Length: 195
Length: 125
Image 1 (tube, rainbow over the protein chains, first blue to last red):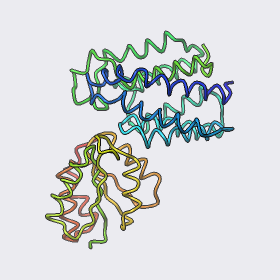
Image 2 (tube, each protein chain N blue to C red):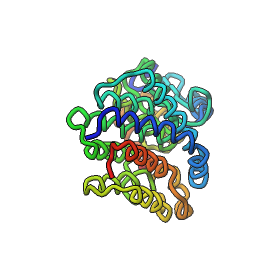
Image 3 (cartoon, each protein chain N blue to C red):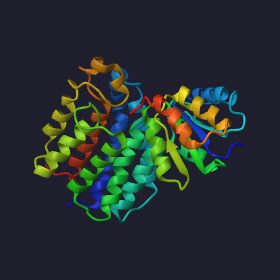
Image 4 (cartoon, each protein chain N blue to C red):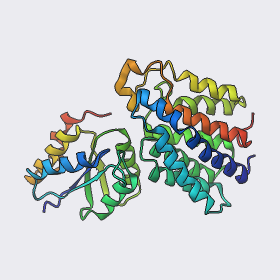
């Protein structure tokens, strides 16, 4: 079972990873959205990093709650309430369980509830849902992360800003799915979610 | 002042929220209309903090909210979940819905009747 130190390592790594991919995420979002996913997420994770650097945590629930509320406050786009709701939902589950699969499943439920989206609508859920399924089956791999993200390309968006484009959203990767793939990558590299 | 409800206008752009308020004041001088538009630095987006502060600072305990696009609603929902005030989020066409509500609040029409008049304007899911 992952320790709180591993979670912190993974999430701090995510806070460094997103700014490095800011332009790429903005470009993905320019194709089918409003072009600011990278900038918004960068603003959010930098605030999270500031918070984590100046706090100490002995309970996962407190760590997740701080991350969730910081993202809600600081991101400034739809990914704020969505990622924020994921971590707030994880914070609630963390009072009962520290099982990474249960926590990620709670995060997925938080996103679904807030965004009212289901799999196949070309959103971040199209990374979270298949990967939580893989976690339940004990089959999460780097390839699965990449495959889930790549699968968003041929989907037609029916939720989020890209849905205004209808069929024209087909053929583009989803930016929220990409940032979610980075999150899962970081969690795997730190050993929170084992291969 | 009409005490039935205040209106909160949430937009990604401060000028849109303020512009809509300007339009509504024309027909609703006695209705409390508050706004939460854009981000703190004036850029485009919706801010949970700004929405939450608008709700907290509002003199009314009943607040009807109209919004433009996706994240506005999600941030409104989180703000509604974290206040004791009665916050209702209306999935109506932003301009037409808020204008209808403002006009009818000014005319002191009862809330349930206003809801009926708003129902054909519910264009968001």
